[in-house]
Length: 501
Ligand code: KIV
Ligand code: ZN
Image (cartoon, rainbow, N blue to C red; front, side):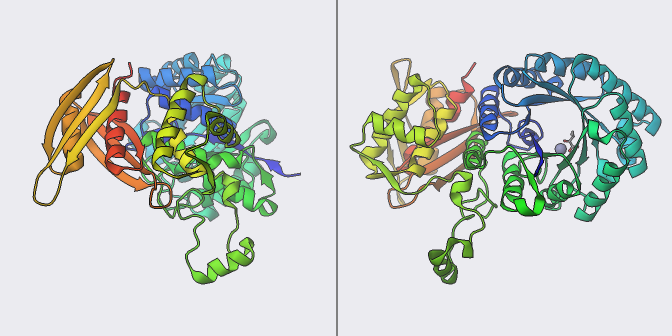
């Protein structure tokens, strides 16, 4: 009988701490719903005490999610714990998560506490948390640079106070696989009342070891893995959920473990996160990268044609990568469109279906054959419904090598048309300047990228922009077979997000 591994996803807490990965409340909520569809056991939704927005995001996730435990981080102080519990108490299944560092380097230079002081602080924090909530996780920050005997003493005290799970973070991504194996085995053998708690592993990827170390911990007996989608997180990131889960899935006979993740939702979850944050994954990223299933070498292609297993250890359909098979076209009606989306696993609200179908029709006018990939790209944004305060009505752009670019852009807001003309360093700069003149909201372009996301001459181009006003960074996405239109739409999408009250 395979051992069940619990998956805690911390994309919305540890992942969101990564530069450029911050999400607004609505984006966190949509991501949480997708994590629930993905089948994660625990969603860490934020760190409620840090800001009113984080508090609200955790509270809304707690209110919405029914099929996963929801947690939020607190330091080992009552104020943090109270705030976290206030946000989490509405959850079907809340869990408090308390962290304090156990390594001497953190104790001396960050907490300025003795080991004994830290132990007492942790002990009373867990005891207090237990009076509020039956599920309490304790994380020993910087566990892998802590004295193992002291770490054991701390974790045993957490068990005595009623902690239900214990996590050992490799906070700075320093551990080797052999050390992970040693520490997990040592704790497994020496923790008091070991069966009463889950032992969790939480790795960072500073030395590129996060997934390998997480898998090693599983082999050594850890019960819970802590990951983020696309491996986002502080510095070099956290353990990538999709890589770890697919390793457990593909090498099930080796690991003799299983988890509740629905692997066919992995690709969509990765895409949704990239859409929200504007941060894509490298083409060679395992599992979800654009090249993860591409076979260029002739000898490989030959083998694949004879038998896919020659060079492919997983199939794209295992992770839900849509096929590039033609599925719809110009003459497909609303019924066929809805049916195909349902087959792909999308359920779109009735009120958004009209807009989605309209977008499909516009695309079908320009693109003869619509594939599942096109549909995925088209429908992605409907997962995050942003009120379209401004919509693009029309644009004309002139540019060339001997003239400076000029753009005329017409936007509609509340039924009124606004038109501006601007000159710029290139066609996109000119268009964005014209839009700035209309909107005038103080945000400026911080980042811009464009890529083809489907195949062929009439490929769909996806533009991602990040606009910034002081510390507020907002991401927008635009899609079109015309790259200028995609770029303008991405800019308007970001502007519309800034206008959500
Ligand atoms: O990496 C870490 O130590 C953490 C803790 C705050 C749980 O993320
Ligand atoms: Zn971490």
